[in-house]
Length: 357
Image (tube, rainbow, N blue to C red):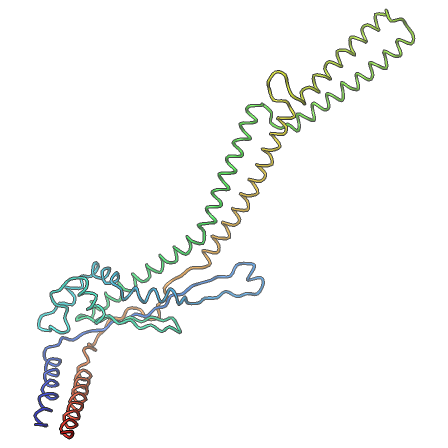
């Protein structure tokens, strides 16, 4: 009975597995590709002058994302859309190693885990992908598509990182540009409305005119005093000087009134000058804000360019010449070992129970 159980439990299944592997199972070819996510951080000019060298390192977070992406349903869909996995992995006469007729995405993902192995070294950040197929060209095509899609995803991550780096700086720059445009537009409208390009120059001109009138007024009064000392009040020259002085005083009053509130309803010059100064201050602030935002945006762009990710390959997709899989002898020995171990455990349990009786 012991010998019969060994034959039925161990030898018969092992023989069946060996017969299937060596007579039915189709040869499978392996294609390998190895790569790593690299992040290049080129030092700026100031850093290089300061003696800080440029560093090139790997990003473990990006590598973790890429590792899960290769094993994900999304990758299976992408490869299936480009290569048609069902046609690649459906073969007649090998029901165990082939895909079969079930083309649902769940079946494809489950089969993908069997034929595509991803090895990830967390310490070095290296990823190696091995794809099996019944034709070496199909295996090579699968690893090539995996590399292409992985590279595309890393490029998208790099683009997202650059966009995040420059997004806020670009927003501040747009706001500064709008503020500058609005302020310049208000200043232009003020100049068109008042027909005054530079109130400071007009003010200097008016002050010069007022000073000239005051000098003429002082001169006229002195001449009048001198004339009154040597002639009578009825002298025609006295009347003429008094008319001249009155005219100068009227002009001075008019010039002075232009600096205060006007009775005609138009803006006084002092008010116009205050509005112009306010607009000028706002314009200077807008220009400085724009220059600051532009500098910040340039720095953000330079920072985004300096931090770029790319996929560095250390093993390009290989094209197999010899079928390495399935490893028939290894399968047979593993099956034999597992069956012998299980048979031994059952025999020991049997004798233990018998001895207790």
